Amino acid sequence: YQDAATAVDKAWSKVNPDIKVDYKAVEGEVRKFYDLMFGDLVNILGVIAFLAITISCLGLLGMATYTTATRIREISIHKVLGSSNRELVLLLSRGFLKLLLLAIVLGVPAAWFINNLWLELIAYHIEIGAGVIGFGVMILLILGVLTIGSQTLRAAFTNPVENLKSE
Image (cartoon, rainbow, N blue to C red; front, side, top):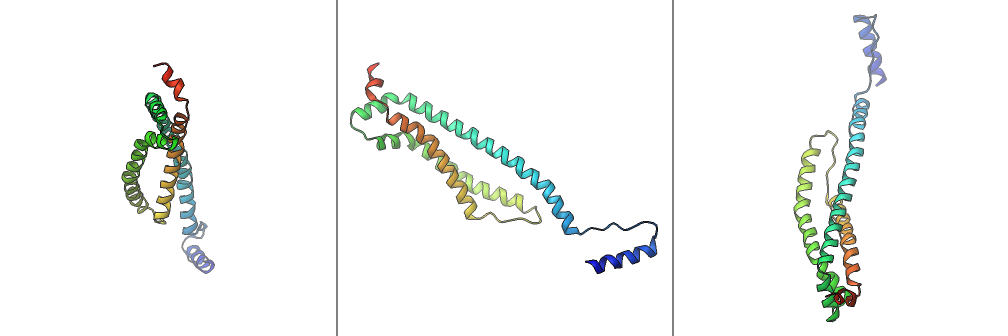
């Protein structure tokens, strides 16, 4: 690197001795550009992703709360007739788990394809493997089960007499 710099300085001083050569390593400039562009971009996309996940969990919580509130009589009758809490939780969360599985089946191939298209445009790109996708699916399932499970457990452990007394 230093030998090339001195050779360029000598050649340039013969051509134009009044102006000094300002040279920099291309790799350092490219790395600085990537850090500038993608460092901020990654932070912004992280905040947007966090907000999207929070909003979707709140929507899922609202749907689970509404479903359990509208089916509280059915839950109480099942409980009086001898259903266990486990059966009630499965009864209430079966539809939501199907939706989560549908989201996984549709979302995983789409996310893999779109991210690979985007990453091919970058000079120093990485491959998105099964580990990254599996980690995302695991986080989705954990958040979904926690969100849905909180409401279904609350509904399963309510006193059926209080709910049926007003009927």
